Length: 76
Image (cartoon, rainbow, N blue to C red; front, side, top):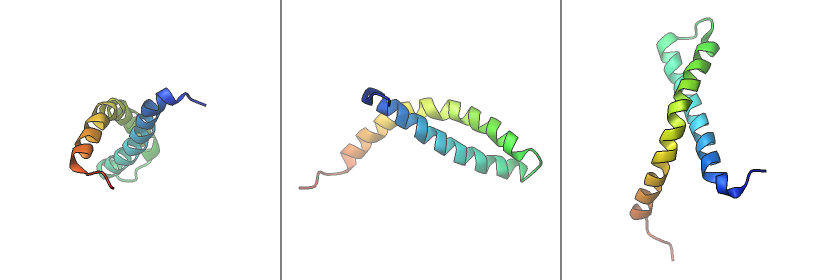
């Protein structure tokens, strides 16, 4: 098991991985269609996307949490 202090990093890694996989797959399909070697092209695109998505989510998620906290009220 991973210590709880790493939960934010693990969360960012998983979310950025899933989102970059999905978005790069759609973008690759739109750019190339279902050509021979599509999966290989997609994987390369995904790795590059994930390299950008992970640090971005690590920076953006605390900002998003603060914005959400300002936009909602506590339930009584």
